[in-house]
Length: 362
Length: 161
Image (cartoon, rainbow over the protein chains, first blue to last red):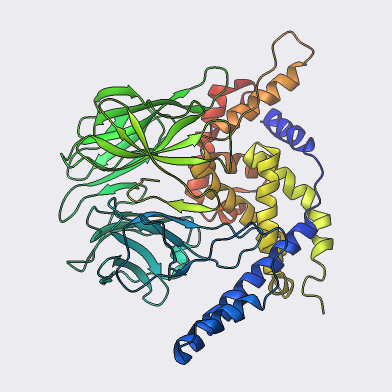
């Protein structure tokens, strides 16, 4: 074990010198400026509504000097109460270099951009983009909202915002009225199945990662990756084991058993998993592989990375990522036919910060 | 009074040590710098509170560990690895062994890698490791066992000597 200790020290000793004090202080100042700006903007909204004036909001925002090195920003209006088109993608701009509006935004299929009233934590949308779910500090729980009608369902599960301090996942059923909310790393680590229509909450088994949930009393799919294999469990059946470490699954097909995962290989020369440009259709009840299909129609430098909900009987959402980049890579959403592998481009994803694409598992 | 008073001194004294841990946790100098900068920005944001009875270094180390586990859960597939040099070139046995170790570390799950770094690089006790990672003692024991088994399979000369 001394060799391990010595080699770890030897590896660490070759790390280049850094000087991050000033950068960290600048980052902290920007963070606090963003918080102050948000408070100022919120106060202006209240005054603006009371006085019937939108100008006051604009004046209040302009009063703060622009942050140096801030990338050009798109102004986002608050989400209207109703009459909003289905969402194409949601994104949360990275504020590492400072930004004027923090928090999640949605881009609708009409190209409109709205600021969400979401607090910390996840934002997601049903595969058809018509309903969104997000954490509301005010409601102390997940809220499901129908964008067209403005109808809101509040989760019967009350959660402190600390549930979303570290890592979390939120999976909505196709109609959005059932969801799984999970958290890792925090004190409570919730794993809950919630039905906002029935008003029920069910605790799920610990250690399982949510893949998808169907409407009503339909199947719930969970996964548990190990070093080189992953267990997939359609609740109500026995878990099956697939020969890959992966989180990259599609939602369960409405047939109740077909699942798709992103194909990958373990490189011989280096112990790394690499996407291999294929998708693998398998039976989630038996674990048997039905077909491995090469995805076509992607640019040469892009590989499938994540999958999502079923758009038609044969098509699922696929997120492709640029092959060479390790961070900040460009990502594009496609619809891929799981039988033929043919992909058609849907839209590029917002380049900065976090994003959420309706129905995508990830 | 400057609310960051003492922060620069703290960073200058501790950043190299934190950077080394960040590098072993991530396996990549650029990622390590990103990780450390994110963590130090958070430390700076809480600096006034941390200097009034908090422990800035303990906070920074805990944030480093947890932020990295959170990043790595999502980044496992994309993390780059170092290429092994061709055998017979001017690299000695120790260099090849260390590169193999880097590659083997990249094969571990985020928690397994973290326990190896905390137990065998920082020489933390199991109890301290559990506290830093926010997990139970049993989890530290089991993750250490799995991690060493995997390292033994991938690079036996590190663990069996």
